Amino acid sequence: MSTSANPSVETDSSASDTSHPDKVINRLVRANSNYADKFTDPGMDARPVLQVAVVACMDARLDLHAALGLELGDCHTIRNAGGVVTDDVIRSLTISQRALGTRSIVLIHHTNCGLESITEEFRQDLEREVGQRPVWAVEAYTDAEQDVRQSMQRVRTSPFLLHTDDIRGFVFDVTTGLLREIDPAA
Image (cartoon, rainbow, N blue to C red):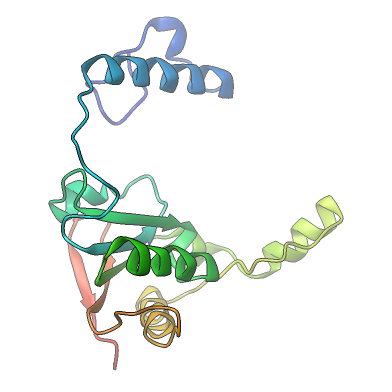
């Protein structure tokens, strides 16, 4: 029985209890072994065929390749909480463009994001709990569309990026699977 949303992933009954992290990781390692048994080197390099980088939320409900009709090797995928453009996203996009030839950037937030339900107080809570404040911002937001606009602006104004003329932002609806394009000027 599988605990995955993908019913084709086979697990034995002892591995179906995913409440313990060791069992989850063991399941993933077994799945990789099965994958590797059938794997053939696709003969690709790290340059994405479509010369596009996609920045999106890490939310498990987003199957980006399926939603965008992408295949292995088509794009660079950069994911984080909220899909927000942080310094590390700029770092990854800069490497993607300057070293690996991407030219287009797609930014994707989504409906019902966890970042909409927390605030920057999360950092203060962490500081109280562990005795050290994180150096990173939570980047929480209440308006996904506005945050997509902010992310587009961060990309467009980065001095490190070579190609800022083909940047588009979207909100993915987790109940319909549809993308809604965000007008950067609205």
